[in-house]
Amino acid sequence: MADLSYDYDDEDLPDPSLKNILEQDTLQWIFVGGKGGVGKTTTSCCLGTQLAKHNKKTLIVSTDPAHNLSDAFCQKIGREPTPIQGFTNLSAMEIDATEDLDKMQRSMEDATGAGPDEDDSTGIQSLMTELTNSIPGIDEAMSFSELMKQVQNLDYDVVVFDTAPTGHTLRLLSFPTILEKAFGKLMDLKDRFGGLIGQAAGLFGGGSPDQVQEALLGRLEETRAIINKVNTAFQDPALTTFVCVCIPEFLSIYETERLVQELSKFGIDSHNIVVNQVLFPEKDAEELGEWYDSNKDDMQKEAREICGKMMARKRMQDKYIGQCFDLYGDDFHVILMPLLDHEVRGVEKLKDFSELLINPIDLEE
Image (cartoon, rainbow, N blue to C red; front, side, top):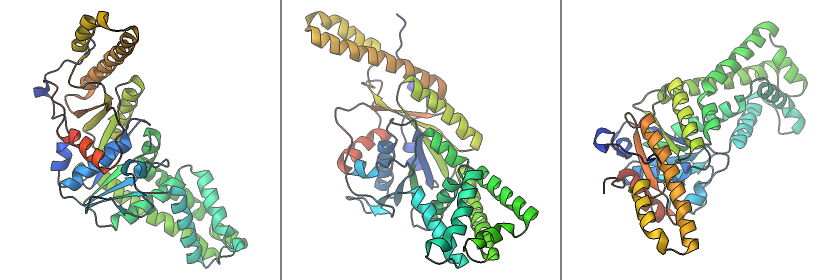
């Protein structure tokens, strides 16, 4: 059987840790992303605790609709920055895109003079619905703009984004393009039909026609300006980086490769990959196989079956870890994080586990 273990000279590879992030004082935005279920939230929380430990005022933001920050830190975290117990310089928040969009709609109704009555706001609602149906993703883009406007006004040295699974994250990165299309479409309608947009909304009691049109176009222009500014910052490697998270399995490695390529296409820096749930990172399958072969005859049947399954899993993991180093080892910091026999929940366990991001297991021991 071919040796599936990962064999490399680690002296020739980038440091297998996230020390490079802690040492880059100019970083303001750190995205943590990857396939669903690979440990993005744990990695985000651990990275946040290390940044805070190194005296950086840090905010962790969950953009995943299925929020897990509260579960990870074992404390209630809401839509506003919530101080994390045990820290003076670490906070977290979980955003709700739907609520952000509703809040934006209410502010537009106030700007156009629409009353609190349900009928008075129909014009704005119908316009927003039409815009959302015409340009998929515009609602998320405008919501993201509201988030970024809020975050930029907060006093933090660095923001860590615990992102949704890969597909949602790539949509987030495409928001500037979506907004350009939305603005172009609205301007085209304005040029072709004049005040018809506002008049149509006015008929439904959404304020005066000019106010409705100016409010919607003004909000989109404001949104576009914010996201274009943010996009410029995201494409600056001195300010922004993306940490890819995966596990040593085919689908996860494949998704990571897709993510790295898309990040490159968007001009976003990425040079760190965290590989979670690794069985005995300090040992390879061949070494464990020799131990198993020399001891299996003395084991009970159940023990042989358990160890046999563990060995099969270890060989598979080593195969994909080897592929990961082949793909990224020369240019990326690849960090192997061990599979533990307990969950990483609560501040103390997150602190302990986070040390392995900075002081990795010695693979040569």
